[in-house]
Image (tube, rainbow, N blue to C red; front, top):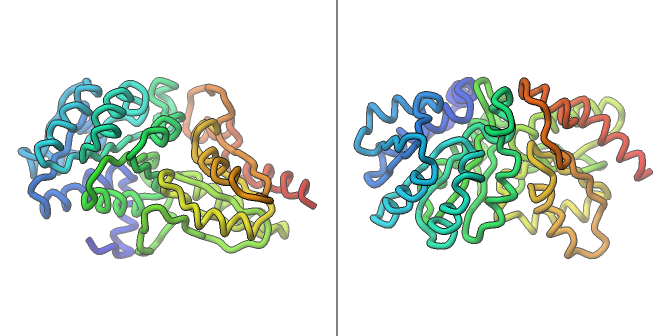
Length: 325
């Protein structure tokens, strides 16, 4: 698929789910005979209508039965299909974790799990529909690739990549309609490789998902105050980019990890696990949900409670950088 600037703008308006289910997967199904798309009664909410109408024999709505969906997906994969299966990320990571562990991670079935409304995208629905522990659960499973796109273009690129590789993948979608773009043109997605979005000689900010945009905005605020932040997009949570992280540790004395996820077990933990093996590693600050369930409301309201808006991030990074002086 060609990634023109016009298409990228359109995908941003559609959001990550709209771009994946309304654009990427129909294109994949047209090119690949053995592709299947399963959902646990989220076809309408996820924008799957176009796919379902065009490829009814490649689509299955299993109803509100997420655990069964994972089992059915594994069975189809064992019959030679490349299967995409989607529901709320919270239900995949919590309710269906046993099936994901046994059928996908252990058996290696060729299933691509797409966790929609990840993070706090379903903010007003409350804790039951939030996925703020999914990265911790999924990256703990062997043989499972874990991806977290920063915008709609990256979500499309990851979906296309997943369709061409054999093995289980977890794709975390957190961006709703009018998802802010990080990339305005094709940049060449490479799984497992950190992307430096901004050069900087001061602190290094490593972000994932929607927090990449917030980190870039925070860096712009800090730039006006004379603090030069480098910003990195960690779109692949597993496997992590050990080489890329090693370069960051050499260049920066302060690492700040930012995620719309519990700090326990998330992307920041993955960074810290590798950092712990290194001699003379820099100090790390973890920004995310601090071991607490927050009040429901708009997504931005939830972010404000967690200190994850661009202004709050800038204030915290500035305070931590002053400690380095």
